[in-house]
Length: 241
Image (cartoon, rainbow, N blue to C red; front, side, top):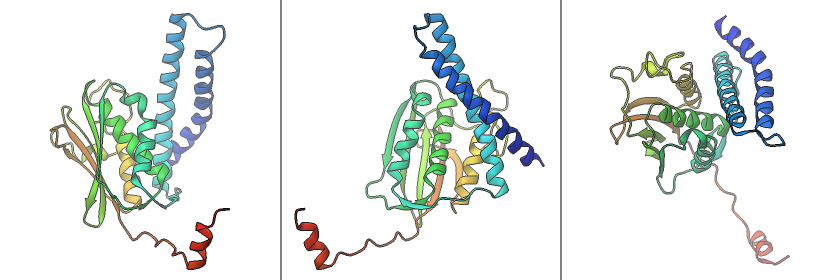
């Protein structure tokens, strides 16, 4: 009943929020240009509307995932592609932080839903940015670990509250029990649901930089073999058109 209520409310709120995002963007770029104070208000309106829209999207996604209505669009893809798209999508939240990527060379193709894994990475990056002070280091790393590809987002911030490593993945649970930071505590719950739907696991712990680390895995599997070219195909390929 709770999931149905969340889905219904989120669905009904999404359309007006999308309209508000568009209107706030148009207001900020209106002609003639707004006065500086008005422009600041328009941009604040845009930022808050985007934040509300993201919260509603998280609510709707959580309800859909738990109801089993989400079908994974699994494709064999390079991890570098989804890391790049997640970094671009999270650029605004990461402006005040020092970002590093440490992807092991020659990572194999992995079968995953690019849209959903991008959501996982965006949530982890934004979570790291939210709970670390400006100027902190945030690292995205990936390497092979047995039969899995292991992806880690870690930082040199204050770290996780002791004993909260598992609780932070529960729905409506915050990293800080009483906090003025925005959010309703769904980001990491959605990450866990998405990763487990892919056959992987996600956990939290201490980072190599003594801050917080969020680590998830994706099963490697066996990528499809590339088709072999016969002599005729090679001849046609080498012949200029």
